[in-house]
Length: 129
Image 1: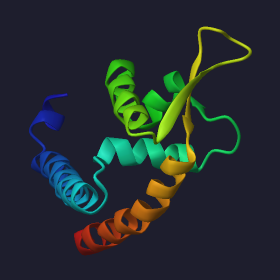
Image 2: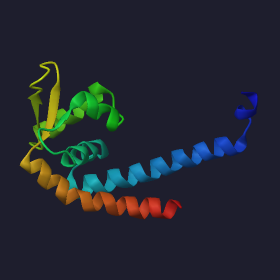
Image 3: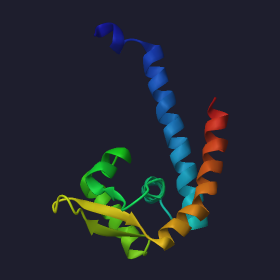
Image 4: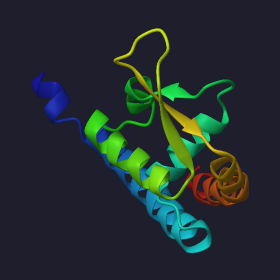
């Protein structure tokens, strides 16, 4: 393990990943907020829900996919719900499960914001290579 701690290439690669993540996240945050009044986490939830057919996604499953704690995701879903972009529904098979479901307004906002998201990714990740 001591060789790993002293491996400057490993630490350098880690720092490159952190830098790339910060650069992309900041660019996304700025563009999505300015053009669509959405944060990165809000867009990511809409993006995951838009890809889903049917009644939505279990919040518990969505939390792991968007890399947020369940409580943080619950706050994001609450903001989206307040804006009329998603609604919550109870799971029919398991009354403890709660689904996040995209509304028509949410689908429209996602459709408007997705090209911005993809353009920022192409610009920032394209230059990272």
